Image (tube, rainbow, N blue to C red; front, side, top):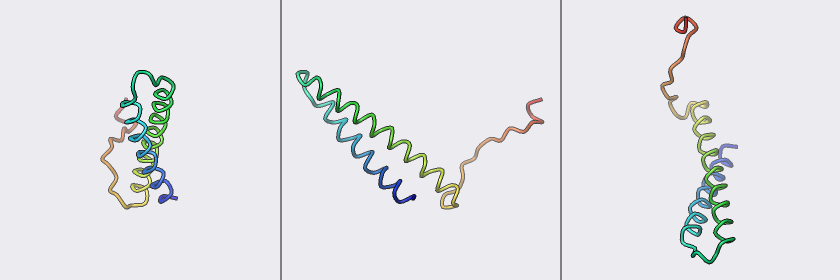
Length: 79
């Protein structure tokens, strides 16, 4: 499953950069094409972020990567 998510991550970021470039480089006369390229770039960016964060959590959970230092709030500290 992790390899499938990693593949999705690569494809999503490729789509983000490709369609983002198309959106930025299209002229002012290509209105609907620009909107479609912006939507596809946003979808690629959102999928890429989701897959990246999933891979980070998965690698920490499986022990492949060291977990980050996170503050844990105890009930004693809040009183």
